[in-house]
Amino acid sequence: FGCVFCDKTIFGRKFRQHSPERIVDEMERIVKDFGPIDDIFLFDDNLSTNRAVVMDMCAEIIKRNLMVNWSCQARVDTVDFELLTVMHEAGCGEIYFGVESTSPHLLEFLGKKITPQQAVEAITLSRKAGMKPGCFFIVGIPGETEKDIDILETFIEQTRPSYVGFSVLIPFPGTELYTRTRHLIKTDLLDRHELWD
Image 1 (cartoon, one colour):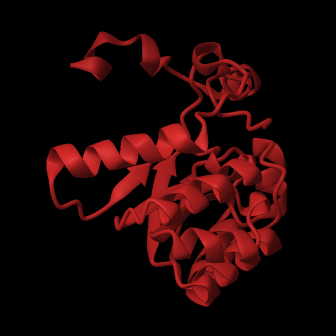
Image 2 (tube, helix red, strand yellow; image 1 turned 180 degrees about the horizontal axis):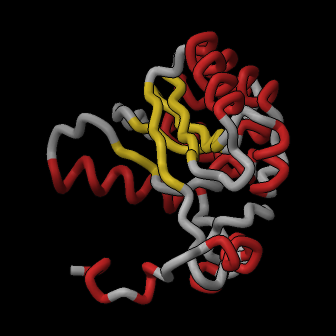
């Protein structure tokens, strides 16, 4: 995807994914080696990008009768009710969406390529499928106004996510965001030794 804040100098632009069997093998190993597990969090913000892999993974979990709760991240534009229902049937109890902003002009600035309406729909469908939907947001986006904060507050009040996380936008060197906002940075904190103490 084209989000301007993602550091592709480290992670690159290529996307690869483990097979459904390998993912479930690892989940099984965690349960076996560490005993009763409250939740396995699949730390992959691109998990839902390949719908077929997620569907096969869920089928594999169900086939193996792996009784474990798990949670994951997803993009709001890559989920639908059928997928969310199957995920829930396979043990997914919570899903977290990187919404980032609820103002179209800020989403456009970030290169997110989603809409607030897609976020509303993903949250609604997740809840309907039996999951607790959570949202991540970014504050401090260049061009953000008090009106944008009001729009965000209204969105949260209306959709009532089970979890809300806020991050301050940081333009990391090497990102498109850094290139576009370098002139706004008064002190390059990333070069200051005390930031890392």
